[in-house]
Length: 637
Image 1 (cartoon, rainbow, N blue to C red):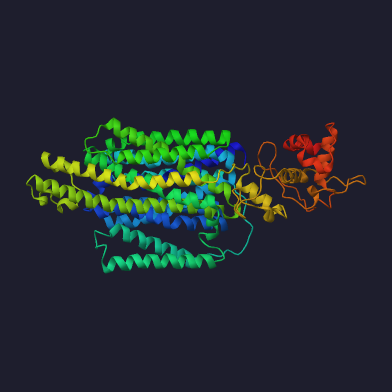
Image 2 (cartoon, rainbow, N blue to C red):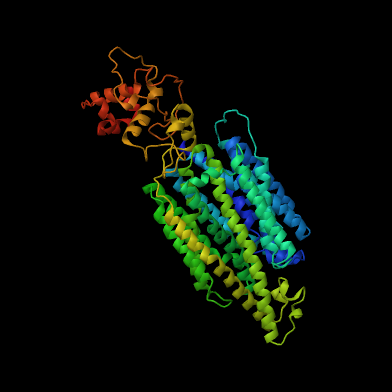
């Protein structure tokens, strides 16, 4: 694909990611009104969000693994169709149970989009250039994550909350059309596909039971009760069985060998707390603005714009700088520190805190998330073997969503309990019966427009303090992000796309055995020009010229192989001087049968340039190094 084709296809991918994010966030500011209209409770409020996050979390690793086995373009289109149909159905819901059910199907589609968009990007964009494009993706995610509540508020105040679900439908259809027309991926080699059904079922069951236990504990049942113990131990047992099955499976959903790669492991841990910050803040900021500040859904969305702008700016700027200079770690460290500081500061807010102060705190969180979130996926894709990039990318997204889902559930439970207690205490101190709120007293979401002034102040104060407590829970997790981002191996970004790496691995007989982790982990990433020894660079570079001259006959004067440069066949690079994939010619000859073609090219090129170099010094020669960068010229010579 040319640069223009990449950008065109990327537009479809970004639209797909936008609708996936919107499904989780567009209802945030509208939920108080939605749940009130459908006669729901605080538990329903939490589950409308959690249902989508739960389905997204559980399905993300499945989509990612399938992408390593089957056609990624088709999977992407299936996810889009599922999402669009579920969105339409959710818009016609008549009660919270129906709404939650269709939100589950929305989450399944969103899980596919979340996993596959980033995997397809790795196919068509090299890690070095991907920093810039990850910035675009981060910008889209920021608009969807924080801009979604603003859009939802406007729709709710103007044409009704049901359009929160309809609004993503035309975008999803447009993405489907663009992807069909512009995304061209080579067909995968035909092979028997083995699906790990047991692993998929155990992971889905264990994670789902864990999240349900966390969400309902303390409200529907006591933590120290038979129900609580059964659910907790049941979730633990299912997850332990999942680990056993994954170890034995031929094609595990989450390859546990990935955890031997330090980059992957540290990125997963860091992603957990980023997920809490990303999803939790977008959900509970909406409640703070409406129930603690008395704002309309539209104004609640507008007032979160500082976080949108912070995330948008930082993701774009950091991505561009990463692509330009090839350095990613400093930006991620700064981002993790900003995120932690923003969360700690947000834990100090009250119902009457100055809006400017709150805006500064939100902007800090946005800047932090923008620098960290997508770059965690980038460094993982750069450090793992191309054959598992789908599973690795989706696993990072899985743990991020898992952190967000657990975070929203836990923080929702804490908020409900805290707010109920604060309201009850406030009303009791004021000599008012808590049942005066109506509709379940202090346990339901109140309609502030119908509440008398003095009681309204008590409710607003309770929600202000409750939301601050929620941020205080999330803040220590951000410290974990700082630690593990600092521990990430500072690996240089590669310059080959996923398709080019796969082609090199397929065409080069020794490519598989020559692979190594970029951060020192065994078998994690193929050697490329960024971290190979000078000799390995010479072999890989000269082998890349073989297709262009494979038809040239060997002559009697061809020098015999006298160094390790030609001792074994090497992977063939499909890159021309512009970085695009070139048409491959049939080249079954090894270096030996073609008269050590790598030595012929390098020696001849050096002699033409007037700088003869002994064979055993070719890899170290600056003349040779400069010539192999101009491959067309060297091939002609």
